[in-house]
Every structure is written in structure tokens, then in C-alpha cells.
Length: 80
Image 1 (cartoon, rainbow, N blue to C red):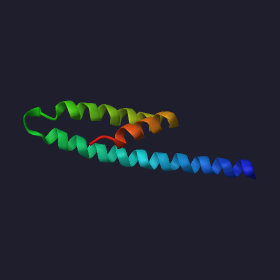
Image 2: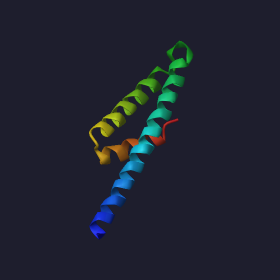
Image 3: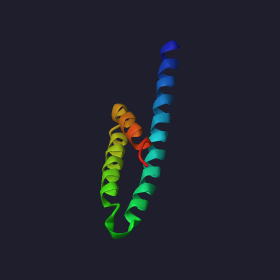
């Protein structure tokens, strides 16, 4: 019983991480749209960096790599 409970707690934490990472991906995609809208291509560098982070974060979700999910969550959390 104890082992089943601890696995349930871990799964819950992973589910929270997935939800938080998805939220950050959506938020940063909105930032990318903002950077893309800056006139004269002034936001292109920022946009390309953020695009790369979003792509890698998405890949960590697809591969269900929780270590990378946590890493990209932390990185995306600090994007502004």
C-alpha cells in the first residue's frame, strides 16, 4: 500500500510539472508573437532564441524526459 501511494504522489508531481511546462510554453509563444511584431526585425534574435527553447521544451514533453522538462520549465519561467 505504501509503495502504491508513493508512486501516486510522484505521478501527481509529474502531472503538475507537465501542466506548468505547457502553460509556460503557451506564455512564451505569446512572447514570440510580440518579438516578431517589433518593427524592422529588431526582435528577431529574441524570437529565435525563444523558439529554440519552446521547441526543446516540447521535445522534452514528447520524450517524457522529466529531468529536461524541469530544466526547460525553469528556463521558460524566466523568459520575459
